[in-house]
Image 1 (cartoon, helix red, strand yellow):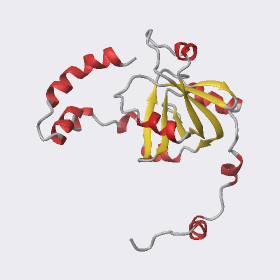
Image 2 (tube, rainbow, N blue to C red):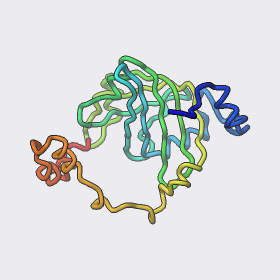
Image 3 (tube, rainbow, N blue to C red):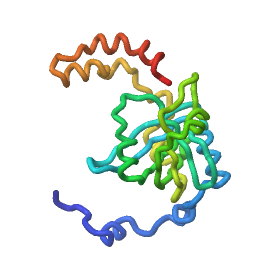
Length: 204
């Protein structure tokens, strides 16, 4: 591809100097103010890296589900999923992790970079129980840096604006997509029809 940026010097020439506020906002610990964002967030995206490549995984629960153990440590319960465990496979082999916290209605997001380990300590797992269901493990994150991200992306996308919401019926269902991928070997309608009840039984 022609006309690409191939050096840091070229990149910095195009974009210029870093905005002062962006330079001073980075901390190596969870401050009181930054912690308020984490405690209010019901949703976080986890990014990890492994031999097969990168992975980005959404996690959600009632606000405050990511526990601030101390100023350098966050804890995230690993709830039930589809057992691909891509994020967990990556952490076992490469502990680097990045988090992006989002709060409905709030334009700023909170970013954390650090490393993680997977704890199977029973007492810790039980402390994260929901509906009497205990997570299989807890992702324990050591904070290397934490900082806010400005509102621009969420404002441009109008992410929290109800007027921009798209009816789910305008997009293909998961069952429809799986049936197409399997060339008809997968019963997509049965998958879609049983999903609401399956969700109730397996959400925790």
